[in-house]
Amino acid sequence: MANHIKLNLFLIFSFFSTTLISMETKTLGKKNNKNNRSNKSDIVVRRDIKTLSHILPVRESFNVNHLIGSGAFGSVIELTNIKKDELYALKVIRMEFDNESLSFLCQSSLRESDCLNKLNHPNLIHQLESWYFESDTSLYICFLLPRMDFSLERYLEVQTEGQLQTEGNRSRASFYIYQILCGLSYLHQRNIIHRDLKPGNILIKKDGSLKIADFGLSRNIQRRRRDKKNYKEDDKDTKMSSYVVTRWYRAPEIILGLEYGTKSDIWSLGCIIAEMYFKYPLFRGKNSFDQLNIQLKSLGLDLSFIKKYKGHFPQYIKAYLTPRKGNDTINSIKKRLHSKEAYKLIDSILRIDPDQRKEAHELLKFCQYSEWEVGDLNFSKVSPVQIEDCENMNDLKKSIMKQNI
Image (cartoon, rainbow, N blue to C red; front, side, top):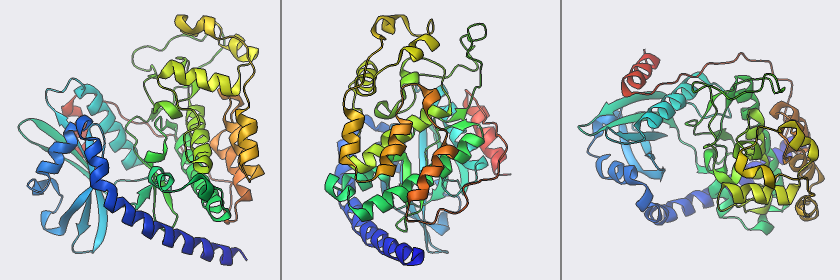
């Protein structure tokens, strides 16, 4: 029976993915044109990539196919390895020497490179090779990655809410959730927070396999005591930034400027799960304050949470934090979902107090309702890993060179 279900789901994945990839190719140019104003580095890469053939590790072995996508500081390009007849993705981060954000870009690039190099899990993207190239005006950081077929964001774009509620899509969603949790559980055990979990950073193959990507904002977890005597602000070397995670997936504790850890990734996952069933983001704030306001209106605020962090909230928001009941958001989710188990999973995650959210390895138990055989959920423990930091190009170049020795 299990094998029969697997075969049926595989056929669904294959048919759906072929359609999706075709649609992605047709709309790629239009989508990228829409973002041209904010993606200056992408324009440069698209103009120069075919002429900068030495950016490839072995130029005669690779063909440049097309642009897959782009972000604020770089692009991802599809390559074909001619000798192996295999597709790869080349992520290129371009850093202009006179860029005001150069220090941040160096730090972000090294963190990503370090994560891609040190983390080894089937549900996390990994680098096959990394290198850099310099021009007169810029430094290019290159990561050679496995080619995935589409992102979870793209998957949701081409579905209607009705389609997402069908039995086949619910089975697919449960399998995706399971894989995200496996990747997060491993990441957190290695003492790393992702800090930018969103549908666009979850990549999928047409066979249904999934990988979490984009570790540019990832960093090691800072574990501290929360009692009144020992709770204090971090020094400049360990302070966890509040300017992380795309707003709609940002946890309340981050917006409030409180300490945060792995549970902030779990909040992001809860938002993603709800979106996987309803197509649209659950909390769509126009700014950070509006985002928090929507979260508190939807889920309420307990007096115990206010007392726990009393004295540590930003001054401008203290008067706003009063006990309140949430609106009907969670009950509305329950009524609209056809899966009791999915509702329980979302309800156990979307809690304002991070202490009330479960860890990734605990949430894996919910995935036993999936029609897929998830196997043994008792993962062997892995040791923490230290992610490097840097603030200048020389340190970044040395670290990337060291990885390839």
